Length: 529
Image 1 (cartoon, rainbow, N blue to C red):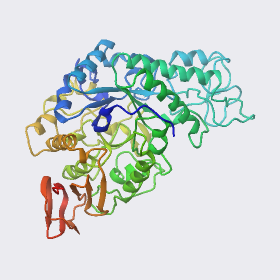
Image 2 (image 1 turned 135 degrees about the vertical axis):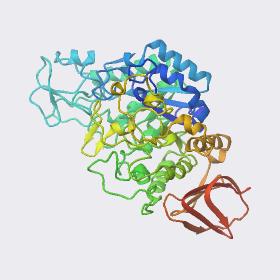
Image 3 (image 1 turned 120 degrees about the horizontal axis):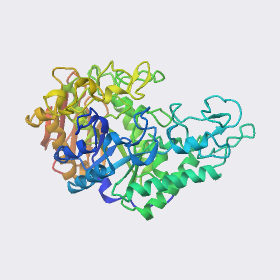
Image 4 (image 1 turned 45 degrees about the vertical axis):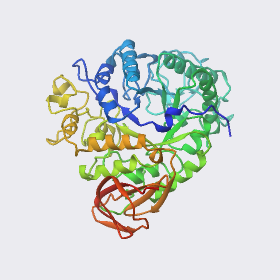
């Protein structure tokens, strides 16, 4: 196994928070969130216990895919402000002990990127993947004077950067080897981009579609080599920086050089089953190819924690000794929020009790800490619609700060907001929940503080599963008993130790060797070991 410099010590206790910048806070009244808006709300993140923020792409872009179509990696998009605004955000965050990560789109650019404009008119340019003649399946016709077609990486407007092919084929001459001139230039470009932003004080990157670089790479071995090369450079040039992977297969990405990888709704041989088996209730963002399943955090009680636990066990065993970490998000910009479809606000505390006590790095998607809901039925916005039941816009609506017009997100007219607000009259907001000690927001804050002050509950603490069902019961660090019952019905199981002290509890009773949890109950108990 390749030896890397140990991960920065701060990563082991990190609490991630994802911000979709155009929807977080609008400081200038144009209806779109910006850097200054984020800066104005850093105290909320600090109070919550967040110490690491990653921002969705904020580079110059035509926004056909919400910024994942980059037109200039070294210039911020004017909609978010200036380089100075970003620098102020980074500095103000640092003063509060918060690190800022950017989103690096490594596998493709926009068709508006100068690289692509040159390539579309120069048959000798190999920064992208071009078939010189015809239009092979999956390719898009050339928009320039260059004949043939190019390979996209996601939407047609996102041409794949050429990192080579793992397997060559004389019948397909566009399959260049990974050490060809074009792929070498792109590897160098990634280093240049990373060096630029890290030199300005950013703490690292979350890497979009990190597994997509080398094509026809069934074991991802060649793609892994690229990230291994970049990690060795990073360890020397920027030893305190981190790389988080949007890969969804920690067993592969972390040995390749990433400091952490997320469980995702896709990725790996099970296509993201681990995460979907927890949260995906068949509403919100649903891919037509997914097999139907009953998720564990559902009132019906039909789901099981087993698929997640088994996936986590395989992944954690594979990365043991690497210094890498696995992150568990509540949601993200591509996937339904926790509060989606039939899941109600009363079911969310148990979900957070689990997410913030399992030995993974927690990643809170903006607004989930107050129970913002996935909003169905929105129009396509910057490429949000991926299928008949898959509209990402519902997870990207404006942050709900208070009960003033536009929920405190913006002073713009409502019809100029980036996306419409949740129309529900009882939509949650930060101000109301800050004023209520019994709110979800206060619970999340207490749980992040408990996690940070209690090593046994962190990512490095041991876990022993006591009952793999309803209720889900496990012991952290040999001392802290966690009980989670996500179903509506009461559930019970036997358990030996009787000496205990409730640290955080709602609807759970330990009595006479039996654990009883009311519907949607949860509890964390100190066993006094």
